Length: 308
Image 1 (cartoon, rainbow, N blue to C red):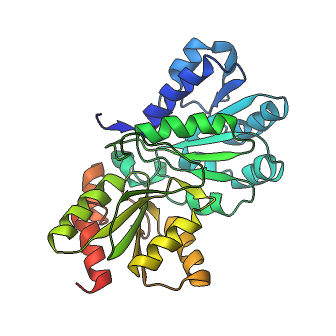
Image 2: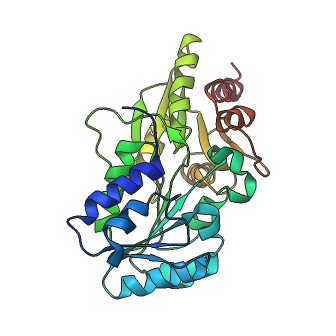
């Protein structure tokens, strides 16, 4: 299976699901082509809306549609939608509105578009809101299954999707389970917890570490809220070391969630690998390398964490 952006997989899944579920509607903020919902709008024009560059209206319209019995997917760039935090807080999370927030172009991987377009702090803000589930799928297979799950999920969900193509990481026969992580590689020396775009690089890093005699357990955390605490505690209890990897600020995202969990229940040496400070414009692969999210950078961080 070739690499594919999760935003592309999302658009394909939504189009397919909408054929049998007539309650699905899409609301865009003038970015249907970028969020991959253009085909949905062309196929189901009576169920597609464009509010223009007006994200607060995007959220409010989504809430109204949900309270009227529809299943709205409201779509724009992650940084733009999460910038309307207060509207999401009151109109969606507080009211438990059945709205699916789709934030595309998340993280460093958007590349040349630069920091102004990057969703770098969205997980931090989304995690703070009660009632709001958070899903960041890692590849095409997981994205399509997670979107199907979200249609039946009662309540607001935040989806975080990549602009760049990501290599497949889900094993054959993989089944997405909400609130559950997935062990992609077994290991005994260190636990690598990762989410979204960097996962394929984590698996490659594990191969590099294996050549040094280090066996890394790699776990895909697709659901950041609720977090699969049982799986994390079991793996970290076995390995005694953990490194979190994310295409997001290290403050308040996956690393923050894991730090909160372990500090309370299982104090363990932890290294959070992500972005410190602001991102910048550049080639996506080059940016991943610059911030240590490529295979060599991840492996180097693990070695330093283990003093190896």
